[in-house]
Length: 102
Image 1 (cartoon, rainbow, N blue to C red):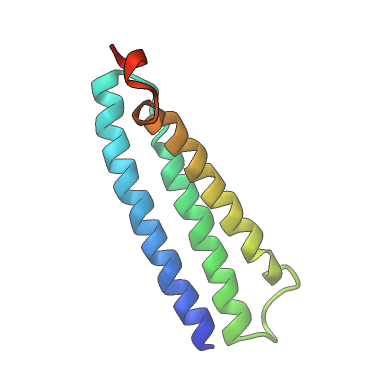
Image 2 (image 1 turned 60 degrees about the horizontal axis):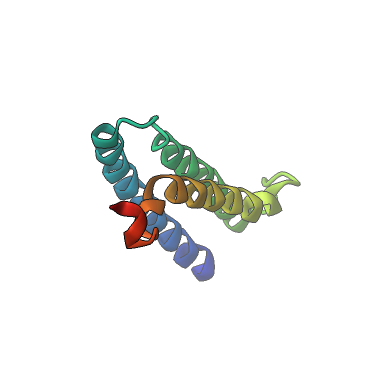
């Protein structure tokens, strides 16, 4: 039970980071006039939220939990992957060489 609560705290912190990145990316997208990919951060947070709900349901009420509770890890992996791809799209210019930026 304690492990599930600690895991929930970590996921909520990750969701907060995704929200901050979404806000920063929204501002960057408006400045650079690129597509609103930042919405993907919200989708990633949704995957994390659903995953942690499934994890807590499986911990608190294992008799009521349906047979797909173990999928919480997959949902969280999908959410983090979406956020990673979105981060690469928006913030890859930071990693480019200084010669390309001139």
